[in-house]
Image (cartoon, rainbow, N blue to C red):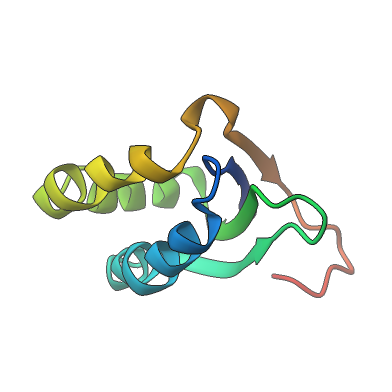
Length: 106
């Protein structure tokens, strides 16, 4: 098991729109395809920061779920074109994390 910590920076003035889009469109769509979204967060002191965490049982599962989400027409034609309007994609940071033995998040 591992987690994917994804840190995004929104374009100026776009964070609230981005949060609504994530919560109303992206997260429900990904969950419907089998993704496990552990949580999503905004930066308390950084008005452009959005962070979310996904959990995977294995690399094979991650690859399968990526295909199930990102290779769909819904993602490519409807969802993805809107992402670039709100995010500064060049500042995205993705970190893979392994839980420690006593981690409460599993």
